[in-house]
Length: 354
Image (cartoon, rainbow, N blue to C red; front, side):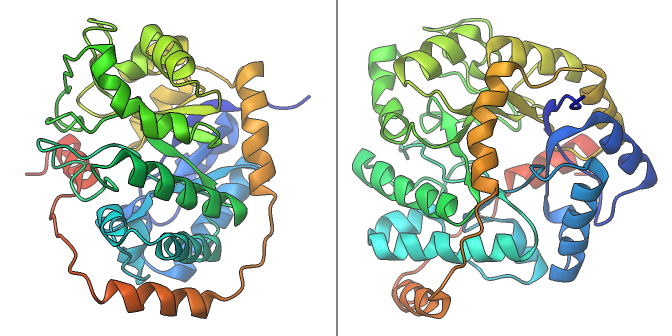
């Protein structure tokens, strides 16, 4: 009998699995594990960790996820990998061959350490008051640029056996509050928000997508989109028409209320296929596992498309040429620097570190 898959992408505490983590991962059979700076020290160490995770869980299709957008959201940089352009810089350059080279090079880095899932690209529109959590992460203010360059990014990742994940549906750019810290409220009509939907509609064939922790009072005055049936079913599945595998943003963010099990259950009841829990603490991991929420038949059907991508063994060629094309153009531009890592801010906040 096939073991059911826990509907969660979880995280671990450090650079090696503890004995407790090994036992719980083996028992729980989670969809996957997401890695962060605390897990990444050297290429050899990361390869050892990803191998151990896959062996302990015991499935060929275990998701090993990273946030590799580029710019300040570049997890592998801490382990000595290349510094890549931010998505905003890709939009400023506005050259499709540069965008493709960006995704080719990141794909190669991820595959070299055993990662197979990228929480990228970000398809949110940049606005004047876009929060620090998203500054430099938005490709542009232009729907055309975001839509076209976003598609190049995710299709290139997919071609190389890295499952892409567009984010943050139904659109996070208007938020001037960081959801890691507080709940953004976007009190706009659905008609106004349709501009934010546009890049996601254009890219609705992407196999995976992530929800936004935003409150849209004109849609649901009680629940943030991630936990809202109206947000998931009416907006994301309905108006946007996204029918792929839908994943929550990190449940530990302060935008959400309730215990971890309550957040898991409400999000899955709203219609997401799986949730993310990224804090890396064992108590939180136990709470996620305690819900015993597994992928449904519908979610498994959506996951089958991801499984096919993970089986892809496309040998990347011309990487030296891609590097030459990429860095020759990047050297002509100055990167806008924003010294703000929302994930690390949240991690320290939850650990009581100022």
